[in-house]
Amino acid sequence: MKFVAVISFFLLTSLGAFSQQPATSMQEPATRMVRLYPNPAVSYITFELRDNFKRGLTLQLYSGILGKKVFSIALTQERSILNLNEFPRGIYIYHLTDANGKIMESGKFQVTK
Image (cartoon, rainbow, N blue to C red; front, side):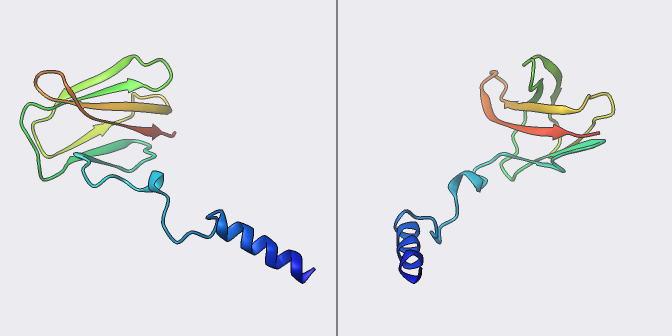
């Protein structure tokens, strides 16, 4: 029995199951332009632009299920709070676009009610 435990431990460590490095998919890239919180959200969500705030950016929100645009706003401040009372629960995709319509960043958030 002790032999089986040693072999199991050896196989797991050689396969990387006990790796000390964090999974990269769980880390938020340091180059994100916008921080949003709370996520999941209930009644409001805050979009906060990082230090590299530029004029002429637009925030567009899409329904995660249908892909239909449900909201759009020109960002004029570093922080915008969006009231979610009219948004049904679900997943939403956001696009941060520049003045030319180029998508600078995308992400998602969840509305729970």
